[in-house]
Image (tube, rainbow, N blue to C red; front, side, top):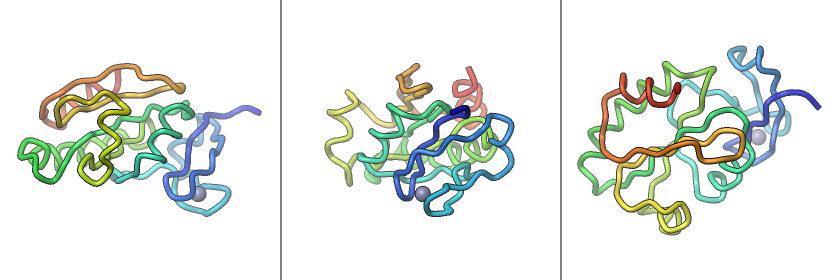
Length: 141
Ligand code: ZN
């Protein structure tokens, strides 16, 4: 079956979306949740693990925690980037305080750390808070 695989962040169903429909507001066939948001979505570890190894569409993860000042500084920048990149990539956030197994599972040593996954594999990672413009450039290449 043709189409790009995208895991629904709500129910976990893997959907296939034709690449020319990524900007057309694709929805999950099972639960109807929008697959392509213009916001950075908070996801849990289980959803992350599934999406990271399944999704064809680029997935950019911000590993963060509420106690981390630089993470809080970067949050609005990451949101801005999520809106700019909607239709091309999905930006998600994983709260490493709430999901304590996330850091060891993904080898995260410091936060904030961004990791980009595409076609089921890690493509690259970067640590430290950066502005929206840098996130957009980093996530697009
Ligand atoms: Zn769903």
